[in-house]
Length: 318
Image (cartoon, rainbow, N blue to C red):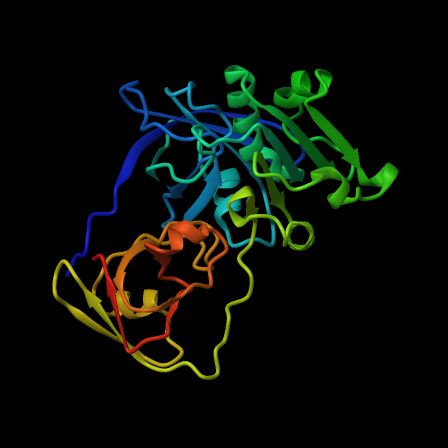
């Protein structure tokens, strides 16, 4: 049974360039040179790799650059295999399916000040955001890039560094900066965002715990360990569009139950950090365990890879 089509866009790799130690920059374009689906600054896409893996990467280019998708990938020898496949197996001319872009900054939000904190290759979404804000010229922003020594994507960040928009913090020389000092005081017109390794994002989360949730954005490289609920009870998923009912066993994820029932749901991280498996819910009491949905979005959506239910029946918009 199919719940909904999983939309992918056919792209071809038109360029691959070295962009730092262990980093490659991939350019994806439409095979017939059409414009690609639009995206917000700092959005991300899922790549459906030739070996069957699906991996999520942030877009580096700005939305006005709509003839291509640009992603930077650091080869992680001990990762889950996606970066190794891209570095070692993908070549110019290869065809790769990508998801429709999701996430990113809302250009219409009433934000006057942006503070971005990036750890190493975590700078990728903020490069897109910085380029967009430079073009728009309507808001103040600062990008703090924390690295051990080498600056990733140096050729692309050089002009912004020279202009003082990007501040490089080299921990090998000065130690790790105080994140609280970097983000400053909370304000309704200030948005702060962080992308980087787990230790940095955990500290950033603590530093901004008292901020309004809508003004804090965090992107993680790796999903946190799954939450084990010893009191988990079975429940029923009711699919509103098809009328199908799926039984979820105690301790089983919604995603696993849906897949067992033959329901196609897009997946990537399977840990509540990428947004690929976002599904609307209509009735019930979902338990949200993701790290990506805003409080407003949680009133309408959930991530089936990690969400649970606090009721015996949960109705999904499937």
